[in-house]
Amino acid sequence: MATTAAPQDVAPQPAGTDRAPADATGDAAPPATPPATQGGTAAAPDTPVAAASKSPAVADAPPPGGRVDVIFNPISGTRDPDTDAALIERHLAVAFNVVTIRRTTPDVGAAELARAALDDGADVVVASGGDGTVGEVAAVLVDAEKTSGLVGGSGQDGDGGGRRVRLGVIPRGTANAFAAALGIPSSVTAAADLIAKGMSRPIDAVWMNGRLMILLGGVGLEAAVVSKADRGLKRRLGPLAYVLSGIHAIREQRTFRVQLELTDVEDTSDSGVVVTVPKVRVENLVVKGLTVANVAPPTSVLAQGLGAVRPDDGRVEVVAYTAGGTLHSISALFRLFMSGVLLRRTRLAGVRAVRARGVRVVCEPRQLVVIDGEEVGEADMTVTLGESRRQFEVLAPPAVEMKRARRRLARTLGKVARNVRGLLLFGVTVVLLQSVRPLFEDDEEEERVGVASL
Image (cartoon, rainbow, N blue to C red; front, side, top):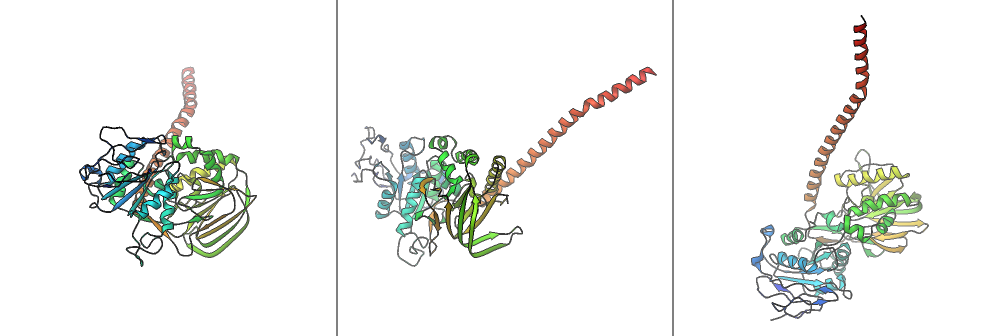
């Protein structure tokens, strides 16, 4: 019996049945008929969802149970959306009794579908698309205040009776910065398998200018980088597009003045002593850019002033960039990138960075503000974590695993760097020996001539 669904939805599929999934209109798809299309986008192909389709990659997944709703943006990325939707459905079915694919359309966005998923009783809401899709879904979960003790103070483990709802991410966009920063695999199947395993970590809910900020925001260089990293460049290079855009933007960005107010500030001295200050006010700071980060991968170079962006510590990273000439700026960008990769703070002239719970920025003249890669117009910046700290829970590798992976990478890069230095030293030595060799040959020739004359 077919299950009726909204035009943008695929009907819920209990795992272990052989019934073909519903097409984009909500009716059961006939076995020999191609899937219908809506608005130029193909509906999900007929893919039986059964427990027998269990993938070896998720053999250790928990027993099936609960419901997962996937908010699926079909225009994200370059892969075939129907193939991706079928793969996601099949891999999630090993851990959930009900899997529902809800496709966005030009008329129905990710936020509306996420609210419908919560109303229908979803235990996990998955955002499958780019960072924009993830941000919309996360905002709905935070606003709903239904997450276990992390958002809204209610849930199975909290004081209230609300159910526990977690956010899953299957990256299919161009940059996928949120997934990259949290160690979520870029592969659709691997990301789905991670969700099926159920590992999660809390992420701070941060608001910039009244809007949930899952990644970072800023003015000056940050805005210039976003504007120069167009969709085509991000499709070709992924997150590295922001690094290349930063190199181009650094030459053109002019300085401006900011007034900065910070609350609950944390800084680390050169000797490693952590200092906290209730409030800091800075007047007439001349900068080329200022970035405030909640979550950021190493490729978000302008957020790496402290060597690690911590998404769950109750503070945001605030990085003011005041560097001068082009060569110095490019060198600083590279060192900031390596600082983020190695999780090690590098103190640089022209880069000031602290952590704070609240941030207020006033620019003179007014600057274009960007939030999570989207331009929001010229305005001041106000960043808060709220009076009562809130977090939302994301299905991702635990923070300790991320740190271990980064440390392994740091050791590998250290070995590579030592080998490169050794090769460079060897090459320089060879060149020097070759350059002085003619001098010794001339001396030997003169000696032979002198002996012959005797």
